[in-house]
Length: 454
Image 1: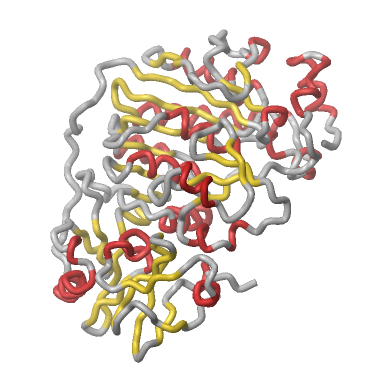
Image 2: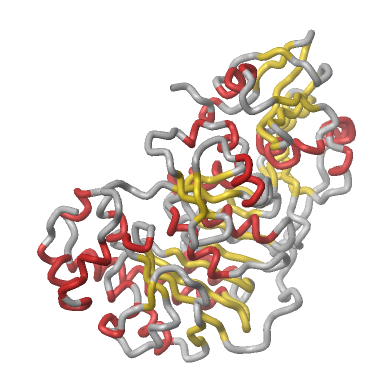
């Protein structure tokens, strides 16, 4: 790690002269990892059949460290089909601490690029709903693509300010993750330039933004609900200090034990805005096998919300006849699912009843099935990435066969199992995308921006 006098002096002042040992790692290289998508595969099954060398870590049951240095894991077909998400190992810790259960109503406040949302959606197992939000528009589009790839059907993707969410959905969520934008000190080993530019004013700016996000998240949480706050930085202002100040502003909240074994406890020397029980929070340093994280778990007072709050329901709209004809032919199990039509597109809604979302900037609610064009229904990739396994017409591929690599490049391939018409493309039982078969050839409909072009 390069030098930065501000950063080093602060670490020595807060942690003592031995602070450098916390940043010592076996190899001077970024940690590489992945998180297995439980909607596709169990962690043990993936470990037993992994196409490259991995090993378990203790940040989450579904989190693994990649043991091959030059591996391009993002081009593998199992990544394309949403079996795993590439994620720095310790980044999986916060979602694991939230302990989402099927049926929860979950908000991922600062969700892009989507790794933690993938974990939360998988934990729901198709029940309840996840609102995955990103404030920055460009990053929200990346989030949209990643949640689509992971195959969750009960996700609402927002591009919103947290204050507007709090105003529209006060007390709605039973679980909230605030993985807050931060000064990024945990990324210094991978981004030396960030270390060189680091200063106290940046830390203070981030802490003020985190305060606002936390206060808005508190308004969104139902009585009895839980909130996990995390950062990928080490500064006291953004971690223990922020939690201490939050508890002073919100006496209805209490600090819970993270109840995990990874990392180490927080530091009393970092409690700059009121003392907290630092044994209940967790810090992750490079010596623990991750780049760097802070995690705290909070609970809101009151009886747990086991019912559904009184919100005006989202208005459903009957789908066009072209969609009904398409679904009857290709996806019979979806015929009775509720839908909404927005700007010419048909969306299959989550089975969890949704509140009215008209006051929010919604990028997607549920699964985008497709659009009607020139009196015919044109399906969307999202439909097949989620429901490809139940399609009535499937082209089956194997992981290592040439047709699979060709399909990922966007090429037309031979159809061996699918009949004429639209067909789901499934790899080793994992939904990937779709194409259209004619005369024994499958014309590729995999979106161009997702293909292996290099």
